[in-house]
Length: 217
Image (cartoon, rainbow, N blue to C red):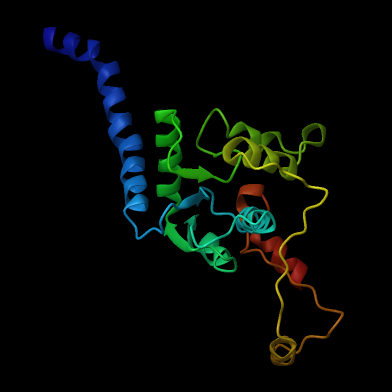
């Protein structure tokens, strides 16, 4: 009984140790992996911790519009989709990590409570109880995504956010290739709708995949 009582007394310390080694240290290892990459001199490392296609496009597009993309700018992408979208923009270097690694870095950053050599682009991070709540507040009293994006740029990056004047990045398309796609899939110009269920996490929004199938039919 004496050993059991002693073990119970030390449980809080043991739990802290388990959380630290299981949740904080992995983030530190990923952070070191990023810094040990072949970075350009005096790098400006922008960090996307959420694998969102729209989030990545908007953040990169705004950085491009503000003239922040140079040979020294680095983009750290969470997952494949975010990485592919970042390739459309003029970053000096792009690094891909997993979503799990990205969230671990944000947890480590919160634990350190210091400014690291990486700059989070988003205003919040889902696993963090202090900021993840903002995601669930969207839509309340006109609090939309673009308003929260302002928080990310101004608070995390120190970049003034001007929504009124902002022109999003546009990409040119080869009409010849588009015509080939329409011909191959027997599509009609002006009467074709593109549905992209794989572009986002529709299941987290309680939209079943069967709904997209019914729309397509």
